[in-house]
Length: 96
Image (cartoon, rainbow, N blue to C red):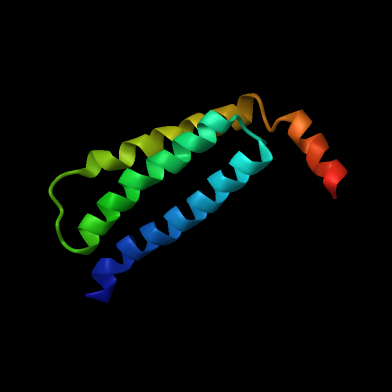
């Protein structure tokens, strides 16, 4: 039974890490805040689906993964094309 739930446990670990990352990005403004907020909002349906699967209530709601999946791709493209905000990096350097 533990082996069957391994993927669900990994999903919860992923969501905890994602929420920490998006919160950090939101606070530091390294990327636009709308991308960070989108990630935080997208984590809610993602974890909802993971909870449904954890309790074996899989009702075909796999599309709940989509908001966060699309956000991850948008964030990736943003970082490749635009990178981190130079102003935010400068501000972070001044505080340390």
